[in-house]
Image (tube, rainbow, N blue to C red; front, side, top):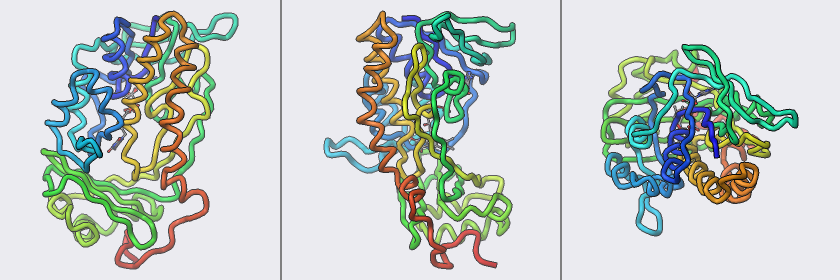
Length: 341
Ligand SMILES: Cc1cc2nc3c(=O)[nH]c(=O)nc-3n(C[C@H](O)[C@H](O)[C@H](O)COP(=O)(O)OP(=O)(O)OC[C@H]3O[C@@H](n4cnc5c(N)ncnc54)[C@H](O)[C@@H]3O)c2cc1C
């Protein structure tokens, strides 16, 4: 099967590496230059471990991070790790067409997608293929070009997060506040990361009290993260966002399938987006290997096998539940951020 992978993030790279192990050589198209990635505090969920095991990388990735929780089989429930290490390990040896963007889809007279139009420094060209896999993230352009429906819903809450070069004694902690908002932190060997949900105050109001007041209030609510948050020196190290959730009623049309963040995005309490994206890549690889000459059969098999694994995360997502009629109450004043004037 001729496969184009749009997006060389974690999921696109993993899919390429898994396919190559089965003798399928995909074209990976990534708009960013080599080595470009969004630095982030990162927790890799156990949902992705089978894919990493298949690639022979699980042991080294687990060893490079810190374990979070435990599964009944003794394996950690997740690994806190610097994301660059995971990207480097998964992408090792995978050829990627960097600084190239998928800008359009080619269709035959019946409307089936039969190629990806790609633009790069040397101009534009079409890569003919049997299947385009959209691994191009939350705002997936390929999903839109394919006409796949995306239900995007703003979360009820805003979110503020920080990343610090100082690790904390525990690898993970999370607490609920009196109004159902939550606060959490994770720490890998080289640093730590914290996040909390809050009322949508807007960025300026969220940063206005200053970094010392922020660190003080945060440390009171989640003392286990004090070493990390107190090492921050400026509000430039804080990121305020108003996150959205994503769900697609269907994941494929003839010639195109969406996986990873392009197909689903969960609220911060799940901590599962990357793990589920890796599991998507593994399931799609198995489906392609089972239907090497029939992309539609591979996509149908993929959707049938993945829906029972992914849909429960979507329907059970606490962020989604809060949208369905349980908005945040004001909460105790000492928990509020920014504090009342
Ligand atoms: C700040 C932050 C913190 C996070 N923390 C966690 C966490 O703790 N745990 C967790 O499980 N998940 C977390 N996530 C989500 C996690 O990073 C993703 O689920 C994971 O990286 C898999 O994403 P992906 O490969 O599907 O998409 P992405 O990582 O978004 O990759 C998409 C790639 O496609 C490329 N691209 C886009 N459009 C095109 C195009 N038209 N042509 C070519 N290339 C294109 C982009 O440049 C990008 O490299 C976090 C994300 C962020 C941003």
